[in-house]
Image (tube, rainbow, N blue to C red):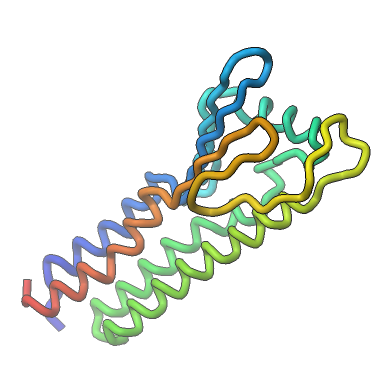
Length: 184
């Protein structure tokens, strides 16, 4: 099988996804007398990036006051497994380039993996928002954060997005298809 340039572009997109966040949340709140913005990015390389550097500490303080468990990235198995997503998709892509599987399987596996990842992440967020401990200083009803979109909980506004890493993975099969369709 002749490897097309656009097919190689798709593989590069998969590999490049390691450098970008899969999902990001932007939180703002008038906490401590001023509006504070916190940015949290779940990276496909298996870590969480925070801005400002004390963002996790501040978020865990807020979690304490509403009875949510603290976020402890070092204990999250999901962060250890997420690097396998692009690695697995790159392996599938290489099998396609070697002529071992058909393009439709590449697309099906890619999109099922992405949909499954987003569904699991929504499940994880649901469990987080419904694990409120009684006796917290600030009473908050159980809630479900959403993977994409804006929501309000207490005095926090959150804006969540599937970020660049997700979209790079989603675009890879499209490039493979274009390479096959237009013989580029």
